[in-house]
Length: 143
Image (cartoon, rainbow, N blue to C red; front, side):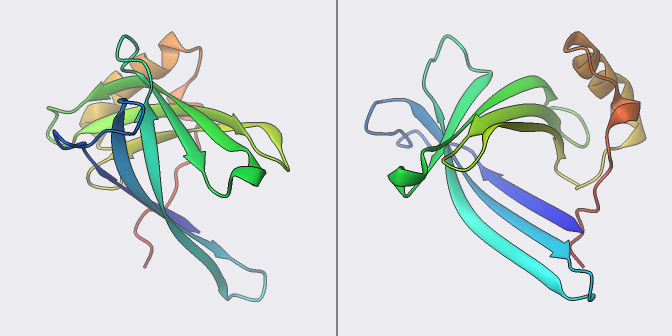
């Protein structure tokens, strides 16, 4: 039904025990059940940048460790100076129950992709062999 993700940029003191940069995030999901009620989840996450030479690659690991949950996020493109800043993330991962899931998100500050940003997002997607027209738009209002 909707999803809302908030990102908090790393502060100068924001690093992991391994010295990699970290970005904190809160993810909220709401899924409509067949009876009209909603299934809602919210959780904090920490994305690590393990290799400063690859700033476009982030790693997400969740506890508990026995779930072996790990995502790799690849930043396909971004314009943080646009009137409505955006970035495109292709993710793939594995956990104890599912190996090889993945997807793609286009993140914007406003929650929807401005028409003025569509050509640049389409270009970023095309470099990865993807088309903007093939993506499913999601209601991010969570109303």
